[in-house]
Image (tube, rainbow, N blue to C red):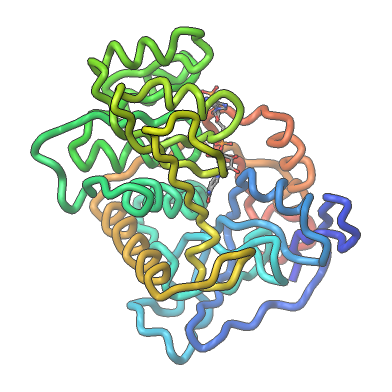
Amino acid sequence: MFAITTTGKGDGKVELRQVDIPKPGPKDLLVKVVVAAQNPTDWKSSGRFEGVAIVGCDYAGVVTEVGKDVTEDVKVGDRVAGMVFGCLEMNGAFSEYAVVPSHMFFKIPESWSFEDASQLGVACYTTCQCLYQSQTLPSPENPTSTPYDILVWGGSSSVGHFVIQLAKLAGLRVIATASPKHFDSLKALGAAETFDYRDPEVAQKIRTYTNGNLKHVVDCISEGSTPQLTSDSLSAEGGTVSAILPYETVRPEVKVVLSLAYHLFGKAFGNFTPTTEMNDFANKSSKLISKLLAAGKLTPAPVKVWPNGLAGVPEGLEYMKSGKVSREKLIYRVADTPGVKA
Ligand SMILES: NC(=O)c1ccc[n+]([C@@H]2O[C@H](COP(=O)([O-])OP(=O)(O)OC[C@H]3O[C@@H](n4cnc5c(N)ncnc54)[C@H](OP(=O)(O)O)[C@@H]3O)[C@@H](O)[C@H]2O)c1
């Protein structure tokens, strides 16, 4: 099959080549990838990884094989989407086929195209971690009857897009930061108010809007000035920030809790040792998102179809690395790849 891999030289470059189709284990699915979507981790990880690995985490496709020990309700021919551990082994989303752990996939309803569904994986699992693992915020299955405020820093990012929706469905009052050109779209998704993150007075304005009572933040950017600005937006007593890149708190009364979607696969990673709780959390998140999709409760973010399928990935990674992505998901249709048979 064709796949995008790192070169093995540790040079951060990726290339389209032919490799073996990965073999699913007894608890895995084999998925024919129809569309893959890009995340910042794809260029970051391919720059760090020294071996040869298939790149890409987010996929949408069709199940072609089900492992003999899979207990989930899934069969050959089902349309599924989700996340694989790209850039670590010879299995990834920028590929004709990917092996998917059976505790981590979403069922795609008929109303969602493969193009739209390809954006769900990393963003939705990270959203669940930020809301229900780093903090214990109400979920759409058990909404709060006494709404309180949550700040979504970076509401126009891929992760922010789903954090806004799940927080709103849970009855919270959502405040989001973004560039002003995205304010209307974020309000349509569920934000009650939006603020320009480049405004020098943004934290002060958020404190005024929340009457100095803000206790919960999801920092979907987690770098640059956001540790300071999210902290400054919180109440005098402090609060909790769900972060998705590591940083230290800048105020002792503000707790910063990091989550990494990679921890959900049930595989050892860096200092992380897999736990049953993590697998269970991933499985619960998979079911929650599948249920919301089936009920028509989620809206996709706009997608940008990159030309030439997988052959376009090196260019797409450069586009993202240069900071040009603004409320859009870059996606690759595998069938657009020169040489790939339909
Ligand atoms: N821990 C994890 O497991 C995990 C998972 C996913 C992502 N991440 C990390 O999280 C970051 C975001 O990922 P993503 O895929 O969601 O990104 P993305 O969709 O590519 O982010 C692009 C958006 O970020 C917004 N943005 C940039 N700088 C901002 C700032 N200072 N304040 C507010 N918004 C800002 C831009 O907003 P405007 O267009 O409105 O200007 C743009 O729309 C990346 O560093 C990624 O590596 C970590």
